[in-house]
Length: 247
Length: 187
Ligand SMILES: [Fe+2]
Image 1 (cartoon, protein in one colour):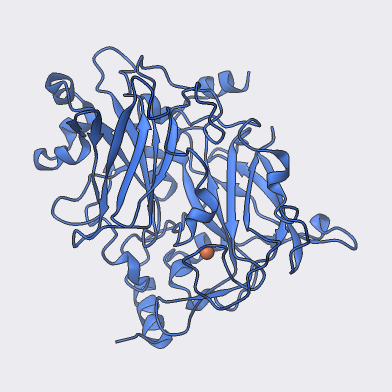
Image 2 (cartoon, rainbow over the protein chains, first blue to last red):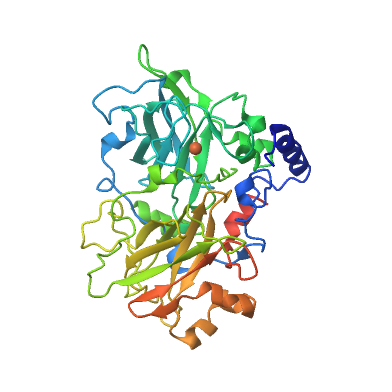
């Protein structure tokens, strides 16, 4: 039986009565495909050692400068609201994560991914792939120019729609800081209906995924701007280790 | 400072995360190449065809690689990092070198990250080399894991390769890991 949005809303409300903290719940039935895919055993706590105290190194030989501009990857200009997303990647102690890889992917302005499994009957944009990469600066800064993605339907339940979002993949100073997440836009009316966003049951933690409109990032006659600063978990490396990195 | 929560990679991660040679840390024809591979399965034992694994490892001498180039492989530099998506049968594979012990007497392992559609956040685990029972028996992590679950962390050797299956849920669920600063960030 296909579930309705009302059914899912009830499940979201029920799960919110047992908040799981600021991280998403692995066991989150309103997100149907999580049911058979979440571990039932609690994660095993260990002190990281050897390779886990390091992160893979990426650099400018991995990523070309123009990969940060998703609007110039084709002969023509993509359709939609041109925007800049910029911010800083910081570790849990407020230190910049410098020289590290940031990967993004997103739907086009109509809410369609350039992916064979995306069956949403919205138009593709021949001038938009929706993939970007960059290497953070010395201050942890990143900056992408892109098109504001549209919301899109999915098959979790009847009339399920994802709020507009950009997928972000991030690395830190050590292996344990690796995270993939999604950035959202302020005031999206779909937040309350989306079991993926709501799988984070702490409202304050959910807000950490929302970029802020920033007029200083907006360029006259050209594009709007959004700022999203990203804090990773803390590194397990000693300050001495990381100082050596910087030196 | 509160760490950003994770979110699922969703069904379309291939678009943003795939790139040429991502799962070939060395060319498969390399004289010391091994095939690290396995299947990702769900709570019913069904294949998970939309998962992505990342490995991060020392070189065979136990040195931690710090050379860039994982995204643009030159065929010569061992960067120690790779990524592989599962196929429709839930199978993934890497061509790589075997990790060495970072210190004498330490059990060598691949550090593994697992992402999937349906997985709300990434999972961490380890894939140990299976060869030396004494070294494995002395390993801090393995000795702290219930004996009947240890095998989920240890690869199986086959000619030219190592098998490492990931079971996201069930009786033979893989042991997944957390670390002090992850736990504290969300305490
Ligand atoms: Fe998406």
